[in-house]
Structures are given as structure tokens and as C-alpha cells.
Length: 448
Image (cartoon, rainbow, N blue to C red; front, side, top):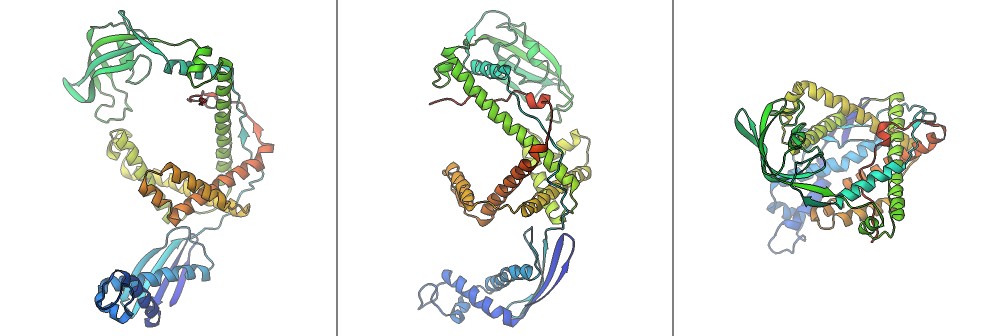
């Protein structure tokens, strides 16, 4: 094997030539592997000599397998000799190939670029100490009471907080539009399920009322054909239900899962909010630290990794849009943006993600952080339990790349925990913002 290499700031390129001497051991290994699935008269499976097996295998299959064995065997040695660590799957181009005689290939891969880390021990992020108020607990109790509420049919006009059963049909330019009609639909007035004005328009109407409601869809509505458009809903109110909430007392506590008193339930709710609020505060602190660390560090993003990230982000966006009944073209039209501008936006975000990942990886090395293999196996066991009824998912958990991904995520989490630990003592205390004090949408953990 003869090779030459060209190293760039974020990538490396090897040109490798193989001759007959290289091919012979690869040929024998390939034949041995193919012999397992080849029936040779007079021999047990896998026991025929290589020269005999060669007469019964597909020459193209043998040629491809020989080259594959050579390349896979060569890659680790190439990077080890060059003292380089690839951070992407190597890309292989075949320049020329004469099976069993000679081959020339080009191997390219992204490598870890040079990173000049900012002083990670003196970052100036603010920390918001979470404060749980009695009103936070009251909000959760109110939602619990709402979940346990009973409905009572009433013969009066609907008001805010009631539930109505309606038939409706949406009309645009005199024609019903897709997804705008339903029968016997239960709607909580004040739930915000429909476009602005729809629920308010039902308030004041009672069972048996039939009326038209002229509205306009928001300009940023998810369906391009309806965004900003004027429509008319034909509505029939069939029933009005009053929502009767239970009293917030010991009886409510007992209904939620075995608490004896309201005081016990309040204590459990407060504990859950404190845990969730603490987690959110810690994550916000880590986000600030990471942003400052990345902004203060110097490195470059390997373009191969950026390309992969752009494609992944595009695919994720398309899947999310599909769940909203939109295409990427609809989305771009709504934003008045062309594909080139959208791709440039994705690329900018992708570069930011790749650089963040590289900086964290460098910090992991600087802090000598390495996951405990017991923790890796614990998380794998936990995931196998979660996906125990999905055979394909459990098989994926045996894939070395998947295991490596789990190990790397643990390393990232440990690194960010350590970064927070280093900077927490000198973090500037900040006042809770509206976002930080927003009541978590949660249910209390019930006792069994």
C-alpha cells in the first residue's frame, strides 16, 4: 500500500494505491466470507478451498468485497500514521480499479480543527435562582380541579368557561374549505383552540341557535391558502355544558392518587415545581455559558459536517411542516423567502451548531472528561426497556455507532455540568424574568 496525504485546516485527503501484493490476503479473506453462503459440491458449507470457492462466486461480488476489505483495513492505519482523528465518516472515491491487480482510491474526511478555547473558568453568565410562590401551586391545583370537573347541561346562553357542542362549516368564497368542518364538536370556550374571534363569537348563543360568523385567518396561519383570508363559519349550537369544578380540599387530594390531605398534595406539587424550575434555571445558565464560551473561542467548522447538519435540519423542518399540513414551498411562500435565502439561513445555524459541538469536544479533552462505561450500559439498558416491544429499535441499540452516540452525549452532559460547576460560584445573581416565572404545565406525581 502506497499513500500520500494533503492536510487542510479542517479536512485531510489521502491518495492510496494498492498492488497485487495487497490484494492476495484480501482475496483470501473475501473468499472465506463468501464461502459461508456458497454451496460447493462435495464440501460442507464454508469448508471448500479458496481456489474452488472462487469458481462458484459472482466475480463482481468478489471484486467489490476485496476492495472493501482493503479500504476498511487501510483507513485506521492511515489516520493513525498521520496522527489525525477523523470527526466524520471518511468519504471514498475510486479513481481506478483492476480487480485483483491494482487500485487507486481517494479518502477524504473532516478532522478536528485547531481550537483556541476562551478562558472557561471566568465566564460571566448570570444565574436566576428559581422562586416558587404559593400562586404557582394554586395554578396547578386549579388545573387539577379542571381535569376532574364534571359537566352539567344548562339551558342558557353560553359564557366564557363553558363547554359547547357544535356543528360548524367553514366557507371561503362560498365554498367549504378542507379541514374547516365538523359535527358534534366539543369546544371549551376560552381554550384558544380556534382562530381569534371564533370562540368569542359563540358566547351569548344557546342550544338551537344557528348563525354565521365572519372571521379572518391570521396572516401567519399554517395553511398558505387560508393565511390572511376572510371566511364565514356556519355554526349550530347543539348543547351548552357548564363546567363544575370540585372544591380544592382534602377530597380533591384523595382523588388525585391517594394523598390524605390537601396539605400533602400542595407539598408534593411544590416539590415537583421546585425540581422542574431548578432544572430550567440550570439549563438556562448552561446555555449562557456555552454561548459565551463559543463566542470567545476561535476555530473553524469543517464544511462536510456543516453540509450534513444542513441536510438534517432541512429534513427535520420538512417533517415538522408535514404535521401541520404544509410543504416547505408553502412555508417559504408564507415567509416571502426563496430557497437560496432559506438554505443560507440553515447554513449559518448549522455552522453555529458544528462550532459549538467542536468547542465542547475540545473542552471535554481539556477537562479530561470520559464517561463511566457503567453509565453507558445503564442508559442502554434503560433504552432497551423503553423499546422492548420494538424489535428494530432494540437491534439499533447494538449498533456501535448508536452506542458511540450515547457515550458522546453523556460526555457532553458531563462537560456542561462541570462548566457550570466551575462558573457557578462567581455567577451574577439575576432577577427572574417572565419566562423564568412562567408556571410549568405539569401534573402532580400521584401516589399509588
